[in-house]
Length: 206
Image (cartoon, rainbow, N blue to C red):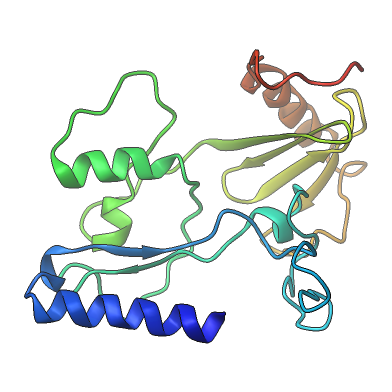
């Protein structure tokens, strides 16, 4: 499947170049979640070390479940071979596409345009924090502050918060909650204020 996908993307890029549309076309490749075990016996994330060096798979809020590749190709606009450490999320694509197309961005969106980071022009603003919630087998929460401090609460909105420094512990192995209670309190506050009830996604009872 990877070989087939690679060939298909190559055919698309070649066709755009043939039509002389390649320098006016942004191609983005990404994924909606980390590796999973849902593809039968041939889908073995342990054998392929699919998450390494991250912890977790699809349906988890650890980095192995939510951190995915993001590759952008735009000849003449994006420098070939460049690598970015910017932390964003899919919601940022709304503001990105609005800026590139000249469209008006709807109000009250938590979306930051990635155009400066993609093109290397101007200073790239970031999200103050990113909030995630997963309602399956309980209600789990995760908050990433400043692209560095990650707090996770599993299966209950009242569960203890585990704290990780992703700059030094990308695999989320060393829980720093007991050492940094002020950081835990900050993240607990964000978990309370960032979440919004939705009629279609109900959190299980505490």
